[in-house]
Amino acid sequence: MGLRHEARLVLVAVQFLTRLPVRIPLQDGRFDPAWLHACARHFPLVGAVVGGWGALVLAGAAALWPPVVAVLLSMAATVWLTGGFHEDGVADTCDGLGGAVTRERALEIMKDSRLGSYGALGLGLTLALKAVALTALLATAGPALTAAALVLAHGLSRAATVVMLRLLPYGGDLAHAKAKPLAQQISRAGLAVALGWGALLAAAAVLAGWPPLRVLAVVAAMALVVAVCARWLRQRLGGYTGDALGATQQWTELAAYLALVAALPGAWELA
Image 1 (cartoon, rainbow, N blue to C red):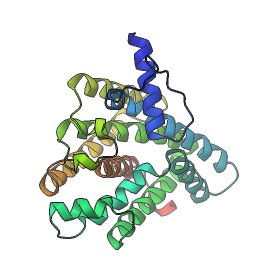
Image 2 (image 1 turned 30 degrees about the vertical axis):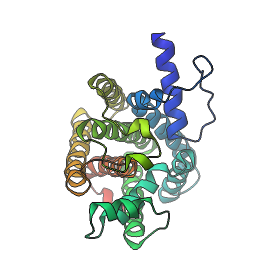
Image 3 (image 1 turned 180 degrees about the vertical axis):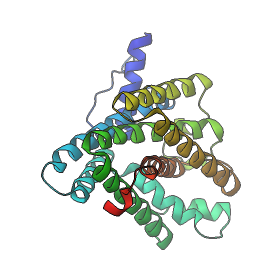
């Protein structure tokens, strides 16, 4: 039951976070909604898969086109694989929390499918910074290390969302939550599993050639973003929402690339 159940939870996480066609082995012919909550501990593993897909596209494209083209194709590939799931969270979060509105009004705006000026600016700047940072990384560190960075950043940024699930209560309208099982605090055991995946990904990045201190800088930068987002969300909404988790993923992923590029001599001049 143990390993089979964990394998099932991995598939649930893949189905939830990506558009990959996976078949979930049911229990007594039924899907248990509790699996959606429990599968969060495997989000970093799914993030690593998404990053690995982006890394494959990056490596292939870098052999044919300039770094900026390879980076944009890689980003497009990961957006396609996830259906823009997290990017949508950035836009909605910026729209809802960009202005000086009440909590109730912010939640109302975040549920609106229309894109506002704050959302457009927030998403545009996030993607632009990510593209420039990755281009600088590819031009200076090379395809192999940049590929490893993609796997690391995508995996650890999903771990960051699990940390948020532990730090904060649900701050949205529970009656209208799209994924109600996720609208509850994750257990310590679940957080430990997610952090364990993160530790394995950090070790893999070191084995791939990234210096340990650089990987620690990535973890520190991402932890800082999580702390800032958690404080901001607690003050504005009283907790997290699904959109806020998506924004946290995107901004911690960006923080990872910025931390890696910061110590590379001449990186920004080559971007």
